[in-house]
Image (cartoon, rainbow, N blue to C red; front, side, top):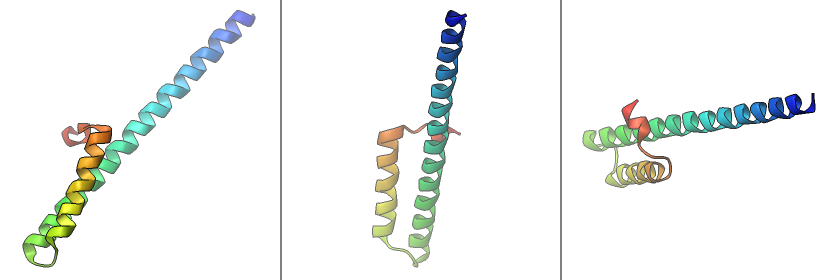
Length: 77
């Protein structure tokens, strides 16, 4: 009986770990999508004359940092 409980505990732990990894992945994708949206808004504002090149550059740098850390998988979604 103890072996069964140990295996069940291991399986539950594996499930929790996989669930956390998936949650982290989804959160990173959402954050990347938000940064991409901010870059688009900054670029649009700059082109219309109400934004600045600095704001666009800051948005681009934030997006590039996110990609360096989490990859660019959110760009294909």
